[in-house]
Length: 145
Image 1 (cartoon, rainbow, N blue to C red):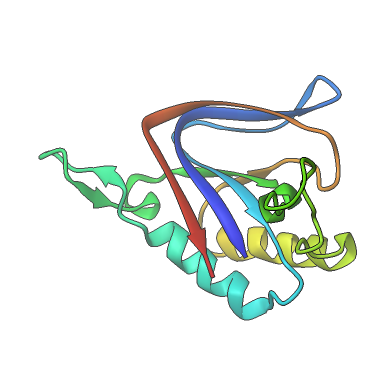
Image 2 (image 1 turned 120 degrees about the horizontal axis):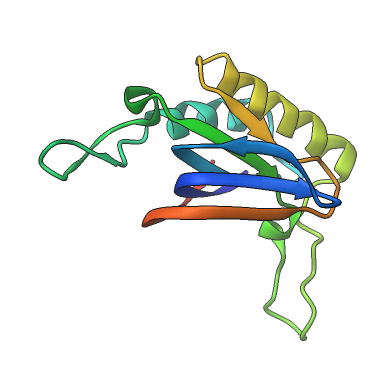
């Protein structure tokens, strides 16, 4: 499982021009799932992400987690995170999980985040989406299981 995490001051995701998910201060997560991911990968990343200390304290050191600052999450499914660009000019997406499996694990991931008392907005699985955000910092990390 691979997540691109962007610390954000504000973000939203639109499908067909309509906002389907929106947050203020928190994280935008682009979530990719591969064939061999399991519930254990989902649990590991949910715990890791909400506890990452990447918000500044009063001394401008990254000491606070999403839970500490009461942040929110905008979670967007992103199979293209498993695109392989090593050969040719068109990415190969063979490492991305099939939609049936990916959607189950993606929904479980969002459920586990919500179980940690975090507000989680989402995009729409399998849809073309427009994601807008104000990247805070900018702080962008790749987190993998």
